[in-house]
Length: 292
Image 1: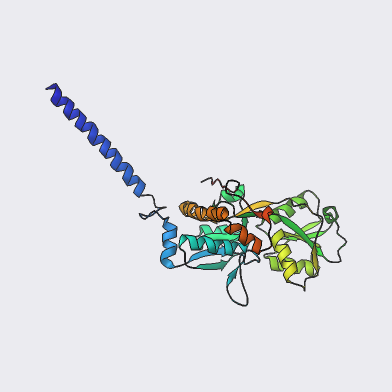
Image 2: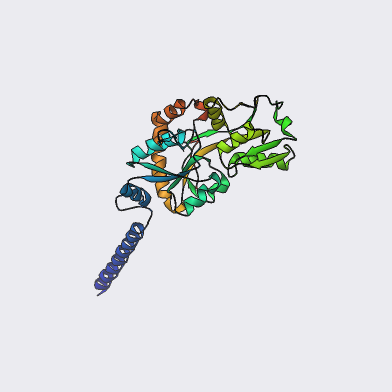
């Protein structure tokens, strides 16, 4: 009789264990971020429609549409093209969005990813999930060729321009708050920013160092120069962003990105844009800790 009871008890325990395993397995399969094939839901959706939709403020040399060919060009685009090739994504389409609204448009589901030399910062990590870092850089101050400004100290009473939503605008705002500049003017793109200083609407602009160097070397009509010597304050590391619910996709992006770092592909892309190893961020140093 005791043996019969023990057998029944053992059978009940086994049934309970099997039920637990079954429930656990069901819970795992119900995770909407991945599909049965192991790919993220977003990656599968992108593959089905044949392209990824990115948001950018259309600024050279990062992520812009060439006015002559209509093709997408830039450092970030070249990196993304290689990532897409490794993930099996056929094409890239871009929506032009003011930089300050990129994450808003992302979270409104109007784009799949932000790709526009965006610094990975604590406040942005509260708004979206970011990839590991693609590369790093800092700001520059652009002034007219005949400017009397020779150092940052000379900006004290000057009118300075910057693009809202960027780290460089925050830097200029901090200078204004500290009384290091006379006033701060906002311009919605790099093009209008450079035009403003070229036409004398502002005495100087604070902008992305890579953009400044590229713009001045490619447009001889601009009678501008970089303030030098100058030590960047707002240096940072750049990544791409997706919605929090698409974090599984960003891990797939990271796998491709880090393989590019290890096999030398990423460094070659940077070199094609005249960037040295100072701009390269290794696999371990480039890890991003998403908060949500």
